Amino acid sequence: MALSYHDAVVLAVYLFAFLAGLPANLLAFYTFFTKVRQKPAPIDILLFNLTVSDIILLLFLPFKMVEAASGMTWPLPAFLCPLTGFCYYSTIYISTLFLTAISVERYLGVAYPIKYKLSRRPVYSVLASLFFWLLACSHCSIVYIVQYQMPDNDTDSTPSNFSTCYENFTSSQLHILLPVRLELCVTLFLLPFVICLFCYVNLVRILASLPNIQPRRKQRAMGLAVATLLNFAICFAPYNISHIVGFITNKSPTWRVYALLLSTLNASLDPAIFYFSSTAIQKTFINCFAMLNCKIQALMPCIYHETGVKEQTQLFMQCNCLCAH
Image (cartoon, rainbow, N blue to C red; front, side):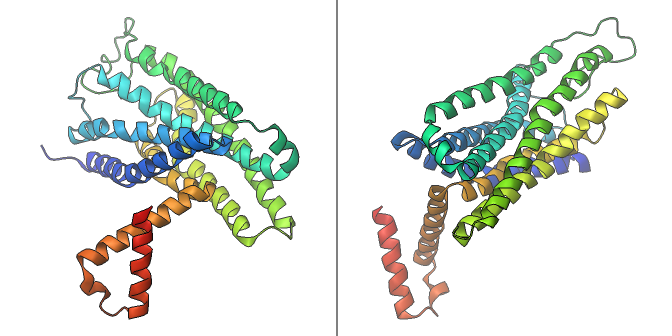
């Protein structure tokens, strides 16, 4: 069966997000897991949870790929439909909460450095993480409620989710779903976005006014602020705007599926936030690329035939040092 243009676009975006996001997030998971086990810091705990959330989303993407390849019908076992939707939507909002927590942690560390350093405890980040997971998962349990909400004498709609997964809804289902979507938008998107905006605008303003701050630190703060706010604007805003439009029009917008695709890309953009948030991730990425360069040189030495003897010796010593670690 030939795919329609719509299905091909959906499948392509899912595939890109999976291939681009999974390797980077697995690398980040290993780095943060090692740091949390050795000497946990609040920011590392938050970043570790954000990484876990992204990996869960990516691991359920193959089910969404099968759905797109099947013409947006659901050929998999029925129990996987609500489970996939629950994990898929939960991780999107878990990401907004952890991105907000990271912005608050960075802002407090700059605005109130002494007071925050004396009061910061890893246990606070652990408790906040548990609260975020509970908050997002409890909200997104609406997937199960709506999935099994049977139409009540609904003659103007066909039974929903007969051959599709969480796509077509009866009026009785929309009566439950649309107000919950609006509440999701306000609680788990608009409020976190306002907090993020406040924290990063003031973070950049404070760092710019301090003459003794290293330019590298200012660049990292600016990069973190831009990456996070772009993540909110590109990945989360269109999807949550569809909630507002759906509540006003009393139906799901036809373009909602494309807005949801942008939210999927969040998992492949978060590694940029990891890079600006953690020096450990920066070192891991640099070492990984250096190792890759060494492997390429070993397999295809002709590429480097124009490299001078001194440069080759330095690269060889660097590769041996990386391999030793």
